[in-house]
Image (cartoon, rainbow, N blue to C red; front, side, top):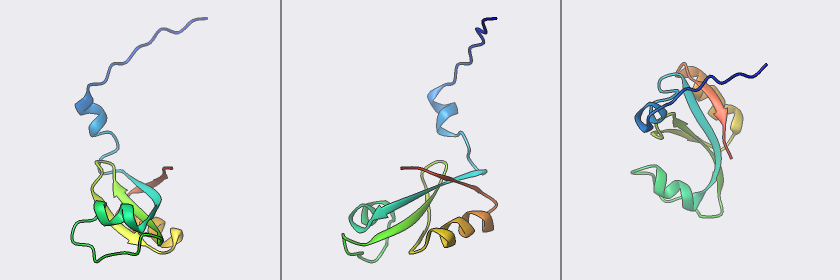
Length: 84
């Protein structure tokens, strides 16, 4: 049996995929965080923290503990998804 179902998504469709339902969790260094979170006080480049982002890339929170970042997703009714 061969299945040939094909779904085409526009760039706009993909850009909004998961909006309001998913959040992306990622461990990041201070240097990278300084550029992603506007108005953030300077973080030492060697620091490793957990960042939570909305599906559209908007920063939500930063934590020094992965569990707290996950809890932040649940507090905002979002399903956390880990990215690397």
